[in-house]
Image (cartoon, rainbow, N blue to C red; front, top):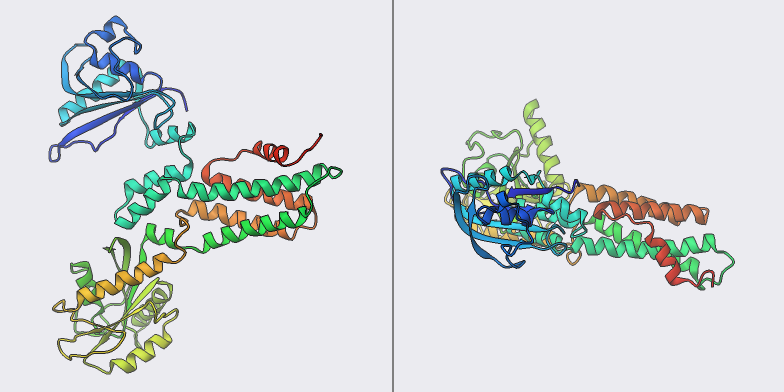
Length: 459
């Protein structure tokens, strides 16, 4: 961080087709309040007035001001101005905002006026949030939550991002770090002060602490909800040829995403569609019809279909209600890897040709759309059950977190079987560093605080 003052447009760039009603320009850094005075007081820049002059409004109080070009003195716009005093701001620095009309000419002239002052520079991507992290206003997980909230496309993604931005992951990882620090302090005390009066049962307490930490991280690593919310719940549509799988995909996607034909074996590769299903992001995959074939290309399509079904979070088996669907159902559910009758769904398609009722199936006509609301309800319920697994603890959301936690988990496993106490302490220290990399807090000096707080050493 170079200590400079930065500025940027905090709202979408207005265009000719989409001018904004309002635009907000944000500033952060030691000269932010000066910029506010020089732009809103006629002649202030030429006279060299500073941000300590009476022209500066009270902090955190919005005031109506005219924005002027600092060199020509020409009025640019009339809007609201506010400044925030460090360190109690979003970035930890002095900040200012200009709330202006959202036309392209207004925004362009205002940004040019700020540039002409030569007191600040245009912010780089993510620099406001980075400064907030560097000033201790948030940790890396909370910063990532902000990025996820901006990128959220579904209701559930928005909720998870807001939860992370509010510090849910920070609190979980901080609790693990605190537990690990306490355990490591006990180990260090036993190593460095073997002749002192240490608490009884120290060895068992250390082991219990390491086990608790390892089990907590292990359960977190096994929870796939965060990745599913980020990348989408994967649903595979499977079934025999000509059962209506591609028609169902098109019906759910509300467009012709897959070719529909009466010729069996038309679909030979996996076709993906991204959907918002009751707030859950979903990746819906149409697959090749499952049957024996002498065609090498179709055989590869069937292999890919089975692989996608095995890897999917949910499976939808589409059967032709006008045929011997019960026999086909028994055969395909028995041969489909990871088929879960409590979660996966059987759809009886073409009920407009052969009305059929059966327990634990969803009747549907992909041609007319009859039965679609019931199918959507079942899909949302199955996705909800899947995403509720492990609910209560905030889910792991990023590959960066998973890599660091896997490293910490492995280090804790080595600590439990270490032949010497010094080796166990080193492995525990490595685990804490890995956790600290996730939040951006790796502070070794805290270990001494714990040691001297818990033990009367050198009394």
